[in-house]
Image 1 (tube, helix red, strand yellow):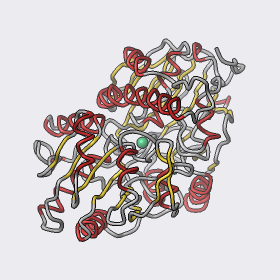
Image 2 (cartoon, protein in one colour):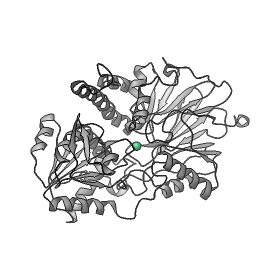
Image 3 (cartoon, protein in one colour):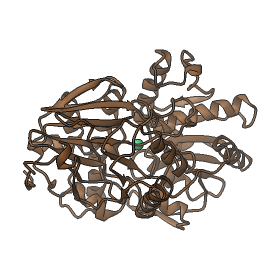
Image 4 (cartoon, helix red, strand yellow):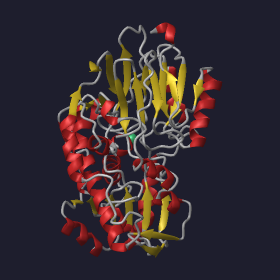
Length: 477
Ligand SMILES: [Zn+2]
């Protein structure tokens, strides 16, 4: 299936198939005369116009792709894979060991959410598709996991005929990597993809490794127009929780199941131990978050090199007191009876799906409660609408009034801010020919491009959707 884009027989071509002036749908295609690989295979989320791209025929014949490389397990980087595999991609998928582990959780769950959404749409009659169809199913996702191959950090791996890749730690979530691609016969690497870059201050992951030398750097820009506030996010979280405790309310924290849940649990444990908040009941209500939590706990137990050395071997670092882990639907439903003060951590992080929708529908109308957002909320998501002051929210096909406190702790981020992105670029051994700024909304991407031009004096551009560029100057390859 798909429309074949003419393969440039001479050049080494990089094509931007996603995450252009938006934070979702990361997909970058590198074509050489001998091979074609896709770096990241992310789902579009947020604005309807973007989500519809998930349904369109991909602008490339997926069967012609030799391999796919994933920077990390978040579904805006991995969640399109089951669809691509179902559409005829048969090659290997290369990712680090923990990314493979996390994808085993994240992708089937994503398939389940697609099916669930289609079922609700069918019951409520609010879909345009009759009958409503899932983009892919849980079974499609489980099937594509067979194509995964695990690679070690810093190993040089041949990922397609004449193309080698090196994955380096990106410090964003467990397993996350920046990827550098080398093409046979070219003296300098073609591209370094930053992937999503973590903050050097992540509470338990080590800081990102410096970028490898390459002709091009493709860098994320989620916070390309912001400096994270100096205010300690742990303190902000503590303040927000004390307010809800004073009202005897319930705090609902929509959290990305992978990493954000772990970071929140880490801070909650410290806040309680420091006597800054009382030890209140915490409900972790997301099977995916709980499965991810086990992978993080085992990484810590095993002394994984991605974990900060001082925290290795402390298996309880992600185990606050009073934590209830709701593994079954019954346990999740029982949380509806919970009276405050209490906290519910549930996915999805942008309140676009998952069990958190039920908690929001129940808790939003009560002014004693708080909804605490702890991650970036892209335009078009429910999370962004609530932060922007929406007075009613449509959830699961019905409208509910928004009376609870809405707390925006988006600085609680596992993304680097502008200064940190520039610092990462500065650490490159040599100036690249071009920096391509992706994975940021238009304003953030332009701001980072300007900062790279002004402060580093480097060539920087914000590529357009489906823009194709030569990755290696003809003379150099
Ligand atoms: Zn990510």
